[in-house]
Image 1 (spheres, one colour):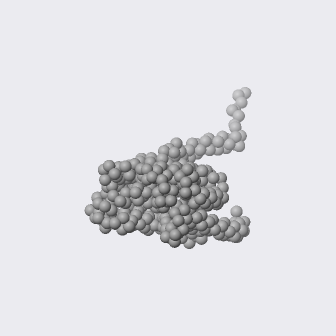
Image 2 (image 1 turned 90 degrees about the horizontal axis):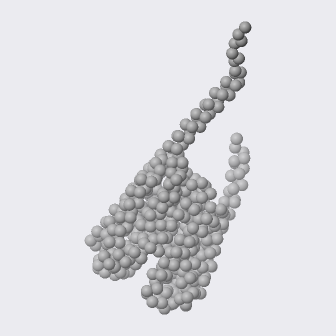
Image 3 (image 1 turned 45 degrees about the horizontal axis):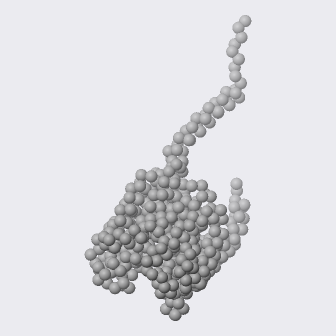
Length: 438
């Protein structure tokens, strides 16, 4: 008698089917993830992308700081005095303050990759127009136009870089993007000055335009393609302006970083008038400052990835100590030059501030990140003005260091308010979260 084949239990068939289905779904999800998830798509190229974004920052930093040193050249050619020529620098800073929030709003529904490329192309055209300027009035207009994409570029670049790394490495990613700005003070500015003296100030703007155009192309080639986030709109970006923590964080930067500019703006005059060093020492002093900012960025980024708010406080405390040392060290070259490096290290504050804004901005990431650079330029207005008043009052060139200490202390005061506000609102948020259904 032939026995019929033994049928497999229904549970075994069901289990086998589920296993094969799960394997197939996992394989499909892996393929879809590789195609659609930006982090997976560019994981191997994240470092290269950060380098490209830093190149854009290098171009921006080079022309922003080199314009100050090229002031005598273009004022002489365009027939205006040096004090009047300073309006071109002011126009650029005003463009940064105005352009950062406006372009964040108008670019809310544009993919970040595309927006970054357009911002760099816009920056290239603005600098080409500056090089072409037939009169001082036209130069002022074109410097304002060139400043418009500055803050938006850094804001979008930092948000993009942070989105491609784990949450505990965001501050480091932001710091690496911002390195371009600090390295520009070490390499870009001296090179632009040399080119300006050899071939005319217009060539410095042409050089920066070329770097900006190159960045735009490289961003299109390397940055990941990703769709616009669901719900992205100008209204959502404006929501950042209604968040108290956003304003407090911006206040930390606008006041706390003002001390850095109070010292930096008058370093050249302080060294030649009070320390009595030769002008040939100035490039070395500015390079030390830029090197300090570079070191400060990397250290602050590392600290912020471990404890964000404490990293901000430590940076401000460092600045207070460094600027106190600077004020005391001014009479002697052997002491003031290392002090300039220490002051520069305080410039690393920009990385944790940028990361903090991402934390408190909710869905309005681009607006908050861009506003950081508006705050940075507010600091660039407050610091020199306060330092200038101290010098005019007869307190001496070293007084800019003490002004810097007071501004850093003010930033620490705003930091304390932000921390108190955060702790005050945290319990209510926790209660609301625990009361919500799970």
